[in-house]
Length: 121
Image (tube, rainbow, N blue to C red; front, side, top):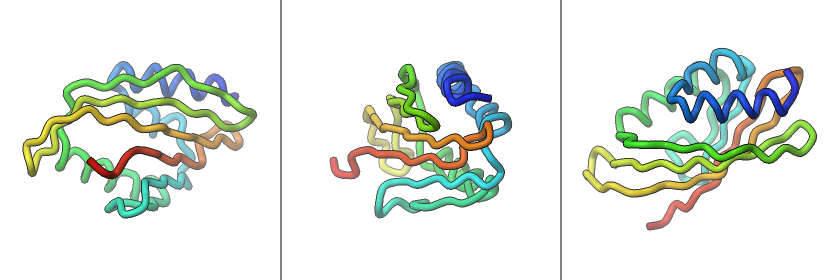
């Protein structure tokens, strides 16, 4: 798959609540996922680590709604804005979170993702 097709699929599936399809069909088994400094899962390597990060997210956050923007493509890179209405389960605090996701594609798969967001309230 080309970068544009991968990006379009990621946006469509995220907006349809089918994120699991992204991991199954778009991601390399050797994916590297990078969160902001200080995050509990700052660097996750491989699908098992990604799955653990997803489990942690589900244990700690309830997602009321989510929207992913249209992608911006540059060669084998693309970026999207993820906007989520979430509740932090331990504190009960509800907020809107926005993050920029930057993705690198190689050999028809996403090999790297990195997320940028505010870490301060």
